[in-house]
Length: 214
Image (cartoon, rainbow, N blue to C red; front, side, top):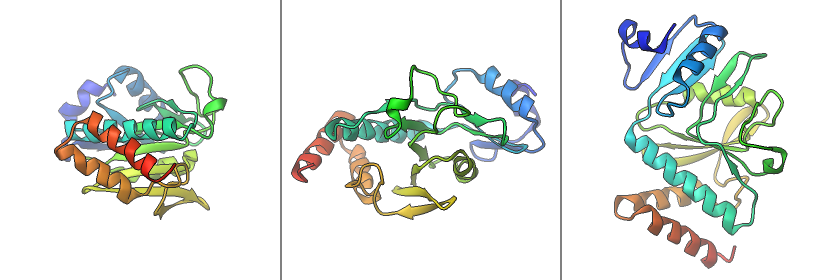
């Protein structure tokens, strides 16, 4: 099924299209058809395909959170490899997803080059999901099976941090990667975007880290 044909045969539900009974081969063909068009995210879970189309505000929040991750890694002297909305899929379990942003931190030294294959490489240590015009509910089920250790989810003006424990995601107050960072702290920095530019927010993050002697 070509991507162009979907809009003619299916109706949109907000900015998400759900398609049942899609084969793994069709999913792979659609990934190839989309290519590097980062405005489209595909989630595949054993025959069910979800097509997500983030809005401009989704992308703005995603990029700001990604910048904050970069600042935290730099100030805390942690290795970091960022892959953005990389395609994460495994044919053996017939699951795949494309997070808004993805990062290797604990496992950064295990990744060589600028491509990853999670059938042989470790999964990202941290991913970001922004749920303003979309829902990442189906994505979470995929991330659980792929072994993503931590997810930052932004929705309704709130950042929640989820950690993979005993095969499921548990909401935690603080990040397991950046131990001083809570969802509340991230939310306060994001609220600044209503009146401040990204450079000012990055400066505020650095100042906050210095104040907390980290």
